[in-house]
Image (cartoon, rainbow, N blue to C red; front, side, top):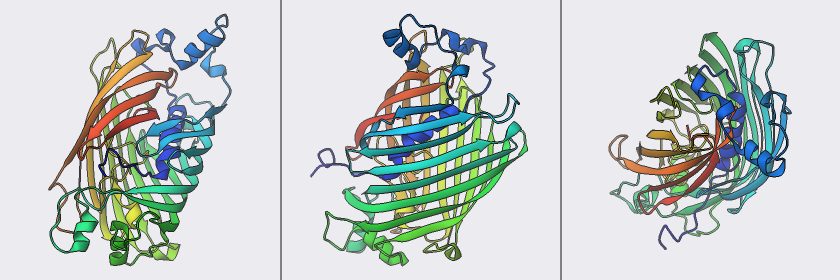
Length: 426
C-alpha cells in the first residue's frame, strides 16, 4: 500500500504538547515591546473578532484585566496525531513587582485524537522575581500509538535481512501501541543577564509495547531492542539533566529579533531505574532578523537542533529524530520520528510576512533539511532529506504575539500533510 493511502500512526506526546506547550509559551512570553511600530492597539486578533460578532456594542477588553485562569477547548491537527479534541486550563501570574520578571504559568489538559491517543498532562514554568530562578516541570500519562519508519535517514542498507528491515529504506509504516508516563523537573539559576544554568531529572517509562498489526518478529523495533538488550515489552529511560541557556529574543513566543541558544547533557543511570546507562548531548540554536523597521513582522528565522549519543544505548522510541525537539515541531512535511538515529542534525529557514494591515493575517514559507546516522554504515551528514511548505497565520492573541498556524508541508517518499498548531514552530 502506498504511503499516501496508508493510515499514518502517531506519537502521543505531540498530541497535547504541540498545542499546550505553545499556549504555555504564549503566556510565558509577556514582555515589554520596545518597537513602537508593533503597537497592539492597531492590531486585530481572534478575541476582537469574537467580540465584534457576539458583543458588537461592548468596549474592548484591557488584556491586563482579564482573568489569570483560562479554560479553553484543546484543538489540533497534523498527520501524526490526526484531529485532536479536549479541554485545557492555563493559569498565569507575574511574581513580584519587577516589570522585567517573566510570567509564571501552569497548565493541564486532557484530550483524545482520531488516531486513538488518550493524553493527560500537567506542567509548570515558574519564574521567581527578577527571573533569579526558573522552575520547569511536567507530568504526563498517556495511551499512545507510535509511528515507526525504521532507523536512520532512509538510506538503502547492505548486508543481512535484519539490517534491511532495521534501516527500512522504503519507509514502510509500522505501528506500536504503548502506555507512556513521564516526570520531568528542572531548576535554572540566572547567573547573569539572559544567561541561565540548570539541572534536573527526567523519568520516561513505556509499558505494554506491542505491534498489534504485525505478527512478524522481524520489525525495526524488535531488532534494535534485541541488539541493545532492551525488553520488548517495556523499558525506562531515567536520567540527570544539565543545561546552559542564553536568550536575547524580544519575545519568547514569536521573536522579531534576537538569539536563543540551549545546550544540554542527559545522563541516564541504572541506579535511577534506567534500563541502560547513556550520555546524550542536545543543542538548540535559533536566530531572528527583522527586515523592516516599519513592519517588523517581516522576519527571517533560522533554527538548528541536534542530538548526539556519546556513550551507552538509548531505547528505540527515545532516539532523536523528526519532531523530537522540545516542542515536537521540527520536520514539517514528515510524521514524527519519520527519520531517527543515535546522531541527528536538523536545520530550518523560514520567512515570515504580514498580509493584512491590521496584522490579523500573515504568512510563512519554509524549508528544512535533516540527517541522521544508523548502525549499518551510514554516518551523520552523509545523506540528507529535505522538506518544505507554506502556511497561513491568524493572530490569536495580539498581546502575546500568539498565532494560530495552518501549514501545508511536503517531503520525500510521498510524505505530505496539513499541520495545525498554536504558536510558531520555532
